[in-house]
Length: 210
Image (tube, rainbow, N blue to C red; front, side, top):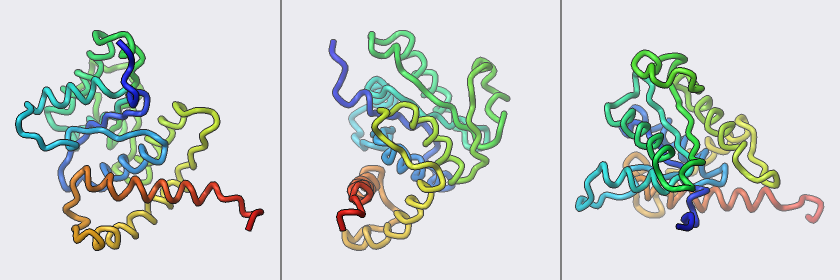
């Protein structure tokens, strides 16, 4: 069986989807995109005909990479389960699944080890419940997985880009008569993807040619 065309770019995001976590979730999504990957998560489809767990397993199967935030304050019972499915898919899936890679985020250092002792030896990346730090964690992890010809901005510059996107977001929403506070996952991607692509094209312009 051949590997799906987007498998190498797909990143499964396993984290809380509540209002409190939303700023962190949207920052993770943005960072994944800037690093030239495709964010995937359970929110991408609202098809009620599919059992939620089956939907999650199907998405995990299509993703080479996984970002899992299972920190104590943010954790939900399904999040360790989704991490387990991801690890199981790597172990027992098809040939190309053997190369799956994942990172474990936690809001505070060592907070996850309280109830996930089976992951001892796994490197956790703590972000201190701050948007700039979670951007740095995700950026640094993904930057090692792109081609040597692709240059990913360092975290401070990426944070500046994310702040610019957040400033532009209300205007982008107004054009479509959307609310920035009520965006679905797909709607967020429909706004962030062209915005990032446009900024990337601008950054390729050679000032010497002006």
